Image (cartoon, rainbow, N blue to C red; front, side, top):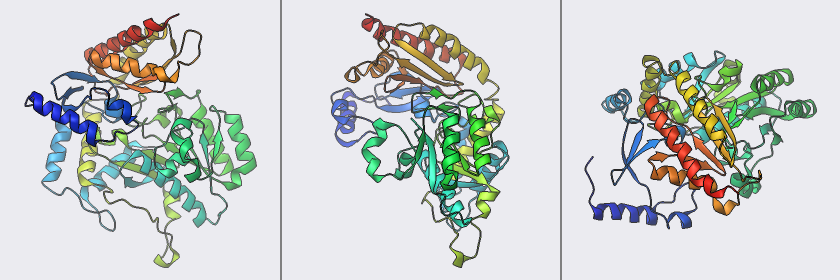
Length: 439
């Protein structure tokens, strides 16, 4: 990495402030702060334009799996560039997309038989919603148009995925644009049964993030909840959509979160870690039963009228194939228990800190919820979790605030020694910020 001079550094910082609109960021506040601009990476470290190194404690927003600049994935992308960078999947095929589909179906729940590609978690969910809706139209049950969701759910930022979301801070402004859904509170399986008893004839699908709600602050579901939802969907003839955009590809300790409850969904949404954190790619997997409802003559208009310009992009699919090969070659899942145990051990100490309300962990996914000593939330203007993340940056670690929750989600491939440093810095950042607020 060539070291930049002061003029180049300042020009980049000015350009970032003046030209870039950052997602989920209040830009007025952002422009008052010193921007952190990443130039390069090495293993589980990110390096900024001034040469400072940071442990990537959030897997670059939950996408990086084995670490940055992984040689096998680098080589796969370079090799694919020597073949073709992109060709449309609308009416044509390409080699990497076929090989990847075969691999995905080998590792996914065995009832899933078809793969539909897109480019992000939001679109993977949009596709599942449209497939479920159109499935019932083709089956002649045209009244089945509603979707059941969970309170505090997050399924993406496009209008369909927002419609099945339940996070007020993100979604309330857009309510006039959204379609009607039925929200079930707090993982209440009896309330879900009641909804199905009363309205199953109108319900197309139930949409859940299995085991843990990520963007809601790592909210854990009670044991057996996912399998109970599956049983109700079977009983009342409702499709089950599992959004594993965040939980898929080893994040919970298993390849897919549904494996914890041995559940087979009707539609499975994948993205984020699918390419190891290299390129945008998503996939919606479904059953032969759902797929077959779309077969017919051209004149019947049963075609699934949905597609993306970069659907099944060969570069992304090549990266995804290499990503899955690394899982096998490096025994990624088999190496997780020791890392998960280390996180749990340190989190026991974190949970004892004043103003730590609760620590929630599933596999490599952690949420540390903060609250005042009296149990009440911190005033919003204090942005307490954001302060912890800023302190961690000063000590060389990147974390992510979600409201009053500090999120920790390191790459699966992180070395134990690096993970120990990450956890210690996280702990110290919490102590540094929270000790000032103990009454």
